[in-house]
Length: 213
Image (cartoon, rainbow, N blue to C red; front, side, top):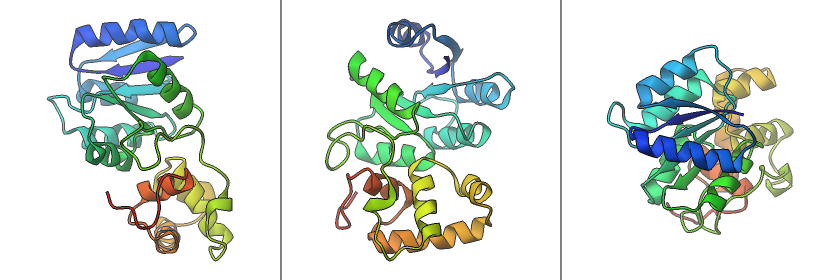
């Protein structure tokens, strides 16, 4: 597995490389000392299977950096590994395009679970930062969506839950981005949530319509 490791502390990158070697089978780590380096790597042609990214690096605002990485590699999961343990940063990272969020204070087992989840198409957040606990596993079937939604609205909701952007959803479903936005707005109204992150968390069973971030 080829893993992009982006953190502005070289010693931390080295230590994380050793941890990944204990978690994964023959990982190949590609190191970046900041978002600029990470984005340059992502924009290249080398294959990547996973990106593990620090949220706070001095050369770029973290959420903008995540969004830039997502634009270059929409199919590669992004796992944020950060010192920040606030729900606000977690939701903002997921909104920007991250597939998972792990605190640097977490143990090796939690990091291993997070990697397993995001590389299998799921979303992972730590216990305590989302109502109901960690999301472990791929988004469930559309049975958790209101029956009043159309089949196309259900399709959009499930692809949102898998982390796809509106552009990727439009290409996947053969519709315009405007139509995707219309369907997504209908899904959010039906679920009583405010944004695409809460749609994903609802499908994972962690968000109720009355929950406030």
